[in-house]
Length: 99
Image 1 (tube, rainbow, N blue to C red):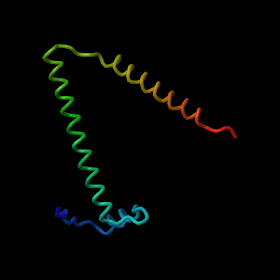
Image 2 (cartoon, helix red, strand yellow):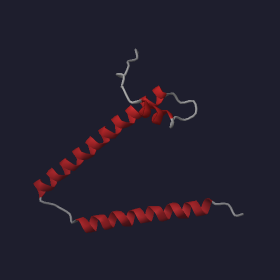
Image 3 (spheres, rainbow, N blue to C red):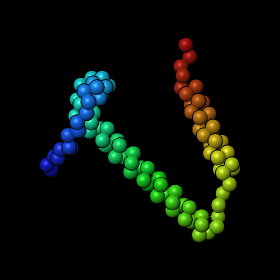
Image 4 (tube, rainbow, N blue to C red):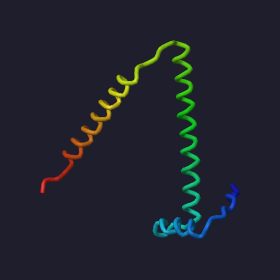
């Protein structure tokens, strides 16, 4: 498979300096730019998918007339998150070695 090039991007020297100052050991500017572009592309796709699911959910709710109040849903989400955090704390405490 042939490789392709991304279009060159002109930036101020200060922008390049800023980016180069964050490079990890052995990482090239090209590798950083590629990783950043892929991450941005994946994030945009995830955002679009999220919005599509939300729109579809709203359409179903309108069709069925089945809506949920915000407070109970948020409370349930918070309860589940608290339970997860507590389970992680207990697992971490169980794996800690005594001194």
